[in-house]
Image (cartoon, rainbow, N blue to C red; front, side, top):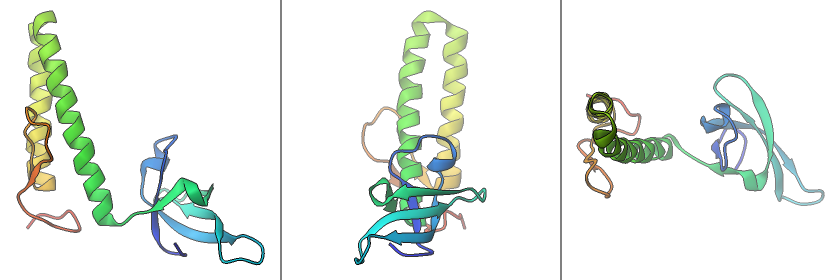
Length: 135
């Protein structure tokens, strides 16, 4: 990786580290081309320095794939919560179902994917857009 490359922190510790960052400085090992540390600037302007092993190169396409995976996981978890809540409290189950329906609609409209909370497979992409924009 080099300056201006986009990266993601491997194990985020707070909300800032979940964001895609930009490498602003590289510290090399003495007398070597081995990168020891990277300084990363996040979209909010915060800069942090990490050991090389703690960051991974990541593009906007990778970022979108991570978002789709997180939304898919959330839909499965909401499905399970809805099933549990059904025996516990009908009104709670209805509210969770509404949240799940909103998530499914948003995933389709904004990400261009069709989620099936009953399936454990990867969602189908209706249209592929690298920048996440819809036509």
